[in-house]
Length: 414
Image (spheres, rainbow, N blue to C red):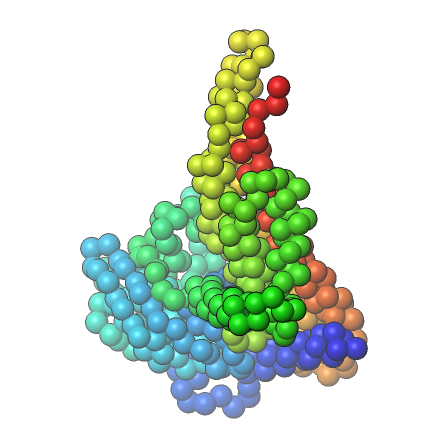
């Protein structure tokens, strides 16, 4: 019953936040400040795909409800110009939908995310902008793409998407600036780290204070999980060598689980799709990659580079396969976690969007009620599935890491 109440509460929050956000866009009497920004917007039909992608991508501010955002610090670097450091994205003076009314050092804020104008004719000083606009252009392959533009004094200027230290790998191209800001994902990771640090220091203190006594309170909740990772993950794979790797396995499990569960909360400080970000899952997979290969013994490297007992001509075929396998293993870890978490978030947003699709974005009350009747049980079901996936994916990542470590540290059998 408690789980059902929590699921119902979560659904109502998702519905309320999304409905408030959409009705704010169709307000018949917007404030004068909103009109300044909205007068140049294209009238666009409700797009569930756009809403889903908007939910899972990272941003520089948390959307709370309607036109309200929780703003975060920004650290931006543009080659040839230098650093721009803002104490808060509120410096852009957002008017509605998280859209700024100012351009600072050619940076602008659109739906809580920072973009930059890559045009030398655009002023570098802080200026007031008129709004934003989508233009449809042809790419190098002749395909029609939509390009976000900022409107300043009646002229439209193309905006660059953000690119970070990935060199444009995930963004499709190298852009004119680098964003090192405290974004939603970074904030969520820092919050998870702080909460886990507090939790485990509290448990450690309880063990010292209650030495030899039965666990109590939060201590009794954490201990079975640690024992489970020890007895059902570490020991079966690593044998007597398990204690060496327990800190790594526990850190991966609890950190991934914490991020997954925080992402299930549909309101601040949750809602960030951290483990559904390829950059995050890549770094987690690299921890496994380096731990495995730095721990690998002579037997492990021998079976990768020059397998004993195999004919020499066959070794020239198997060795490249084994070397490729070293990189494929962490690559699959990265993709599995990313795909599982991202898919769940997209499906939930898609189910909630049925309310606005059937109701024509709030114009039809009967259609909205029909959409609610369809979306309510589907969303409750997906919320329950997402909770299971949050635990399963943390466990899968941990147990696969243990299996790779076992293969790297196993002694030769004679």
